[in-house]
Amino acid sequence: MKRRRFDDFEGFPRGWFIVAFSDELPVGGTLQLRYFGRELVAYRGEDGVARILDGHCPHLGAALGAGGRVVGTSIVCPFHRWRFEGDGRCVEIPYCDEIPKKAALGTWPVIERNGLVHVWYHPDGAAPDFEVPTLPNHGSDEWLPWRHSKISIRTHSKEIVENVVDIAHFEPVHGTHVARFVNEFDGHKAIQHNAGIAYPRGGGKDRFELEATYYGPGFQITDMRGFLHSLLVNAHTMVGDGTLDLRFGVAIRPSGDRSRDEAFANAYIENLTTGFLEDVQIWENKAYRQPPLLCKADGPIMKLRKWYSQFYEPAPAPSE
Ligand code: FES
Ligand SMILES: [Fe+2]
Image (cartoon, rainbow, N blue to C red; front, side):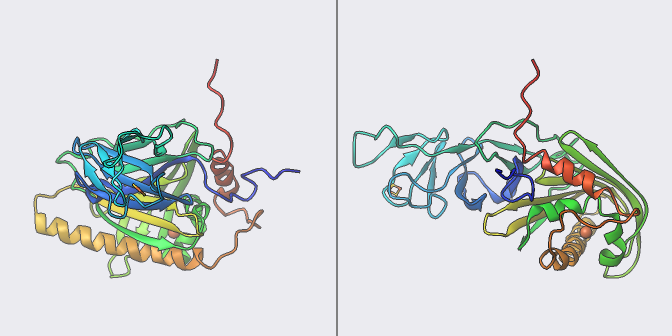
């Protein structure tokens, strides 16, 4: 019998995945990306629009992200300077007046929103079937820009997603006392309401209340009220060699005291990194139990796995 794709969550789920914070891709900039077992190139045209194309040139295979140059809204291959438009078509070969009909790169759906560059992945190349949220007032004076970081982890993103329901790991792994913990599943969203007391490793204690929402399998946005009000983003995008890139960022409300805000944001990112590294120690060494042996005080792990499996199934047909 053919194995269903989601029996063990091997491969990559469909969804929106964050591949950069907007400030990593300036106008005229390029990024060489390796995700979903593919080579990709991201570039920002002189019109300010971020685009993502297949990364290997159809000519002789050079990587456009490794030395490609942005011209207008197009990108030029570093090897023989074939030029490709944002829709993937080759529009110029400087030493030939005839462009082969098939000279084109595959294109990837991109949404840049909230200071984040998202790419849509679907194993069969189908179109997006859910949206990227718009964070209220992000990009306005109400929030400072994302302060962000990235680590590479040897695990599958199903392990990271499972944290959203795993109430029992907070105390032993993070030393966090959880007083209230509720999960909700709503279509492509998986939400955690959590309140308690965190004991940052650097000392002190922080009463917090948060709402953390996964928008599909690739990224989570957290509205956190603790010592300050902040937004957190946690995004994991699979490379395809058994590793993933975990990106995280924090945006805080400005207090009016810039140096205090900066110091706080720096300390915050350091704390987040420490927190993630505590999880990484578990993730990189654990086995995936399917089914796991659960007790009645565990969080809704099987519900979470069912929710996650929807991104391995074909998207439902649009209603008639
Ligand atoms: S490999 Fe890209 S132009 Fe030749
Ligand atoms: Fe955790």
